[in-house]
Length: 400
Image 1 (spheres, rainbow, N blue to C red):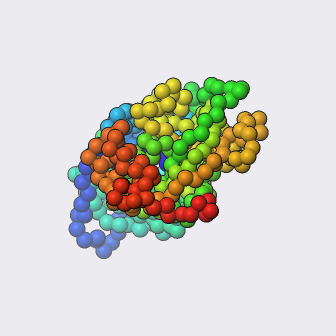
Image 2 (spheres, rainbow, N blue to C red):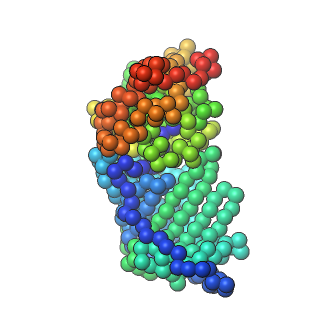
Image 3 (cartoon, one colour):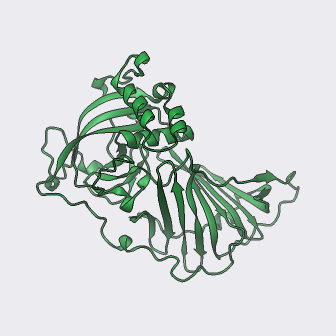
């Protein structure tokens, strides 16, 4: 699947973080800290090893507000990414490049309350970028929480969680000069887009229909399951597959196969939904129309209604379960029949296309349009003969 929360790996990475142990763990653990209940200042955010960006973080326990706003230049996609996430008393929002998504069921949470749990353990003293801190860790069946602090001042916060079979790792590295005071007025103001219905691109009735080539990187036992999943065109999938394999995130997602489908869709694009896990759970507007954005959400409004079809960056699609219909039915918005599988053309093992040099080619090219890498990807599906760069179909067509 394809998920565009915030990713960059080939040429964009977080500033090196220096972490060292300070010696043997003392016999007597320090007292659990009283963490700062309010603060604001610089932060570096990473997600699954990718740079989300550098910017500012704000936290106010009394008013039940927390969040960040960060920027990063995705050099391999040749574009800027602005990302913010806000957790408020009754709602939570995720914003990027003009898009706003409600985090349904989420709201402000006590970021450090878990430290006082009897199950939380002192993990030792560390030095992070020259700053000494005490590390505390809580391990529960679905998550690991860690915080390194100095007299209640947060230095680094780390969370690893598993949901629907997918593992997410998020890290906040707070700047040395964060201030123990309320964030500035207006810090938690969300954009206008958060208070309006998500846009739908113009078109219809009659509604435009196209048959598209779509690719999906997925676990081997999920072939044929693309409802509530993310797919991509060729360039969109090449950039995703290269990054996912190069960072070993495929291990967390259990991705092994890549499938090529012919899919007929109504191209009145809705907001792209980010879908993870099997069965898929999607973040974004619950609309039966197929969602679209440029790869990694680069561009104005993430490229949802781009008139050039995101030709320079590729497309990512979300296929809502509520819009799927049998390929014998006419596509019609009025009946919520917005997309249908025409045929699964081929499924290959990702190790095969990697063996033909896909990832090495991506690392060499370093940025879109990945001309040579796209050629390797295309040949893997076009041929079976290994000498021609081909890969065998690993799932018979009657197993769709």
